[in-house]
Length: 475
Image 1 (cartoon, rainbow, N blue to C red):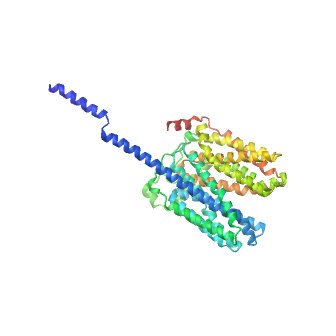
Image 2: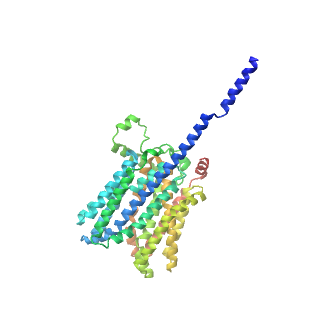
Image 3: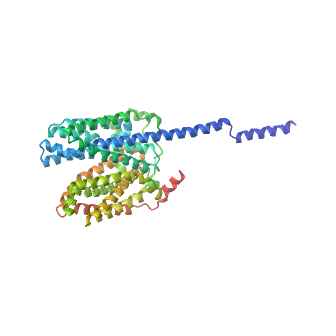
C-alpha cells in the first residue's frame, strides 16, 4: 500500500508543477497589466513630444518670415542683410553635430532644456535689437542651440522600436508642420500692429518658455528608454552600404571604458570622443547616406529658391496667389505623415526602397515642373512634390539610425542636420548662377542632382534585402 501511494503523490506533485497555480496566474496578469501601462505611458510621452515639435515651429515661423523686413528697417543693405542672414546657417553647420553628440552624453532632457532656453533668449534679444549689430548678436544663440527638433527626433528613436520609428517620426513631422503653417499667419497679423515685430518676437520667446516648462514637466520617470536594443550590425541592417560583418558601436558610451572611468571623464571629453567615433563611422560606412541626403536637400531647396519669381516670370502669377500655393503644399506635406503607416506596411518596412521610389518621384516631378506650360501642371507637380519630399525626409532619417545604430541617435541626427545646413549654404549660390540662364534653371539642376542621388542608391543597393524584413516579422 505504501509503495502504491508514493507514485500517486509523485504524480500529484508533477501535476502541480505542470498546472499553473493562482500565484503564477497572478504573476502573468501583473506582467500584462504592467506592459499595458508602460505602453500607455510611452504613448502619453510621445504626445507630449508632438506638442513640443508643434510649439517649436509655431514660434519660429512667426518670426522668420519677418526677419528680412526687420533687418532692412534697421538700415542694412541687401549685401549686409545676406551676410547676417547666412550666420544662422553657418552656425548650424558647425553646432548640429556637436550638440547632437553632447545630447547623447549629458542626456536628452538636459540638452532639450538648454537648447530651448538658449533659443528663447536669442528671440528675446532679437525683439529688443535696435541695430544691425544687435540683430546679428541675437542670431548667435539661436544658430548654436536651435536643435529642439533634432533632439526630439533622437528621443523618439530611443522610445520606440525600429519597426515603429518611421511612423512615429512621420507623425512628429506632421505636428511640427502644422505649427509651421499656423505660425506665419499669426505673425503676419501681429506685424500689422505698431511695434509688431517686437511683439511677435516677445510672443515667440513666451512660446519657447512654455515649451521649456512642458519638457520640465514630462513624465521622464514613467518611460523606459532603450539603450541596447539598437546595437545593430551593418551586415543585417545596411540599406545603402553593402558592407557586412562590421559592428556599429555606441558613439557615446561603448568605448571599452569602465563605469568608474566614464564617470571620471568630463562631458566635453566624452563629446570629443564621440565625435571621433562618428567621424570614422561616417567616412567609412555612411558616406553614401549623407551624400544622398545632401543631394536631395539641395535639389528641393533649388526648387523653392526662386518659386515665387519663376511663377511670376513664366505665368504672371501674383505673389499672393503663389503664397496660397505654398501654404497648400505645406499643408499636404504635413498630412503626408499620416500616410507613412500604410506605406511602410506596403513596402514591408523597407526604408531604402521607399526612399529610392520617393526620390524617383521627386526627380520626375522636378523635371515636370521645369518643363510645365500651364498652371495646372504646376499645381499637380507641387501637390505630389510636397508628399514625396515629406516621405523622403522621414526615410533618410530612419536609414541613418538603422545603419548607424540608434544608441548614438543624437549624434547621427546632428550630423544629418549639418549636412542639410551645407545644402542651405550651397543651394542659394547655385540658384543664383543658374537663374542667369533661365528661371527654370534651379529646378532643372535640382532634377539632375536628384538623378545622381538615385544612381548612388541604386549602385549601393545591398545584395540581399530580406534580413530586415525577416527580423521585423519575428518581432
